[in-house]
Length: 326
Image (tube, rainbow, N blue to C red):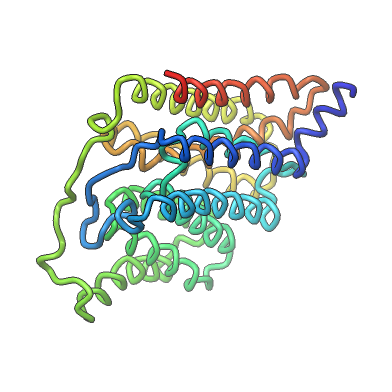
């Protein structure tokens, strides 16, 4: 097979699904081998945090895998409906899958990070539908309602509220109506929960927080930080390398790209600021990085670019292997 055919092959959906299937097999073996370390502690502000929702280990594993699959489905819809990557590619399926595999303890359980990587991309889907449509107040309301409701389960969702406030401006819909819709969305979940007695004022509490670094050992901590560092580096590098391409896009495409850039930068910033809760942002970082790295390779299809792609896949696979053998 020639280099050009291999380069085309890695962008196909068949390749992405094939890699995802191998990742699923590796996750099953990792979980069944008893390697997984569960996250403990209720980190909710008023409702139990996601890691407390499913106590049964097998069901928790299944929910964690389904959460990652849901994120992939949203990525597919974002690219299909809004042409986020500006080209035909499914490389992000393979990239997101191996990035998730590099933190197998997080992949094999359902916790806040899993939910964040579903809720925030879903909110981004609604945001992109509002471009130059100031009458789309229902979508704005839903975005902030989702973020506000899930903030009751963990405070990290609140960190993404500024992303979508900035996004209103990027979508050219920052006006009084959209601000009112956003405020109503933020207030409504708490109004309903308090009004119907689902929670009481005394239930609103500071989260009981256990740092991830006190739960996992030194070797796993090191590999977690290596995985995060590699992902953040690749994502930021590809954003820089894509600048000259993106400034030539039309206004809508630049707005879409700018929204994802703000989301990526905020995710990195939150990981640095809220480092004790860093695992809650890892799947979100993987989401942003998978899209941006795919964007770079889809717009820079050199004949032998498949080599760099295979190297990236190999690096994440090696990080996973190290965690099963150390």
